[in-house]
Length: 99
Image 1 (cartoon, rainbow, N blue to C red):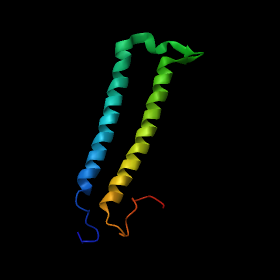
Image 2: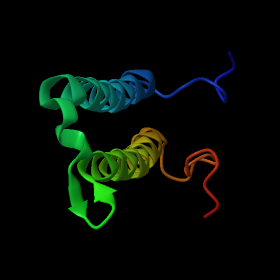
Image 3: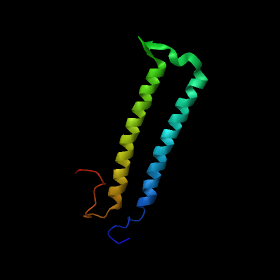
Image 4: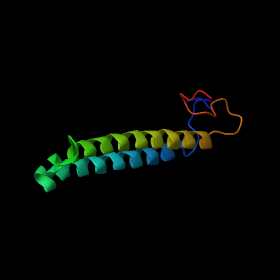
């Protein structure tokens, strides 16, 4: 790799920490959502508000968690990328950012 394309020191490690944290959150959420029907049985079919059941609300909460954590991952990745770049570097903004 040339000096221009080499990753700044610590960038890979910082990016890996962000990816691991993101993966842990989603794995934990998946395990919790998968185990909940086994623990609660038919409780997820309980109506909460009209025709809306507890299971539907759980699905909406899971979708919201995915959106919020994707936003967090994007923000954290951008912060890692920008902090690793020297001031004035041509790639001082994260890849894909349009600033």
